[in-house]
Length: 237
Image (cartoon, rainbow, N blue to C red; front, top):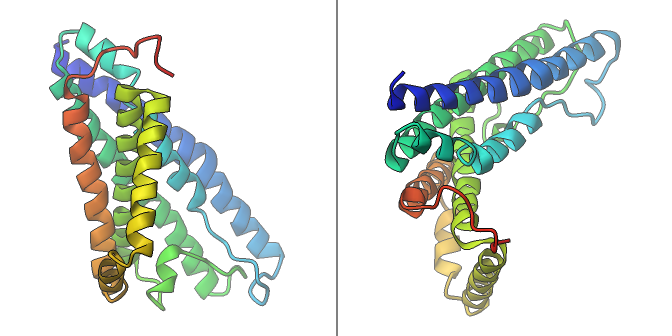
């Protein structure tokens, strides 16, 4: 087993267990079955109850992005791999795992939509894309979730990398300084043109911007971790 194959295999096994078994098989599928059975025996169509199965995968995308590379990095380097190869494997396999998982959740959601539209179950399906699209469209909803998935993968990954390099206290101080700066710019009116431009965008452009922010965060995390230590020094929080 060479170093590249070993690194890819470790990330693949982590992604398969984390998303394939934990998120999809052990959490999302039981939730979908629960709402299917509830919709068969109870009438939720004329109530304010909104059914969604997206909460778990959104949460676990953030969690995997934040911790997915930390345990594999020292092992991969010890096997002869490089930080560059390890990071590239994590990005490629991690993003692919997120995309496949989102697709599988969409298949489950599509089945619930079909059952609901044909009167087999009485539930009100809710999705974030429903605020922008009136009718359920599999491809459009999936592309919107891909954009959200990129954002949820990129931002926690960047924060985790900053924490890995700086430690907890310096990271909090840096975020506090950044928050104060953004607050000052906002109340000074300097950011008003930017916010006005964002509000005026079409939904497709907004989600394109969201995915761009996520991909940019992933790209920024690469040079941060390229020369990172294999283990955090004990003095860091």
